[in-house]
Image (cartoon, rainbow, N blue to C red; front, side, top):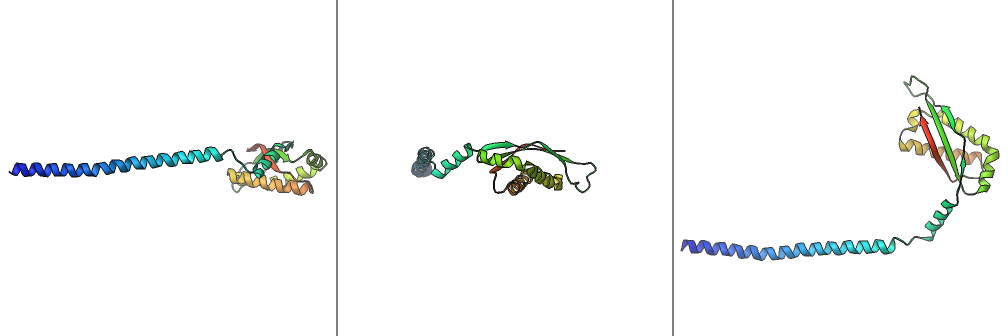
Length: 168
């Protein structure tokens, strides 16, 4: 009798486990199906709407394609000494200016001496530590852009492109 009672208890546990296992499988299958549907919906959304862009973005892209590049001569300057620097430090810089049209390029030509002077004065104030990292290069780019725009006013440049930056 004791063996029969144990057998019944064992069968009862197996039936309870079987009853619990079926909903768990359905839950896992349902969750996986839901994830697949969500991923398919997201992919469909990106494929359908990825090709659409606003008119402003198209106009901006067309303006970038229509820009002109004006190359400046290579400049080499002494940098201001860092504290504890034992030797002179130099900066060699090659820059190109991005302008909107050829008219601006013609406006820059007669004012080239002012542009180079603005560059030289600013660059000689810099220290090697001012040019470290992308943040230093970004600040350099923005300051040179501002100084050029002051030198060639009322004409304006759109951007500065670094061709070469060498700090030694």
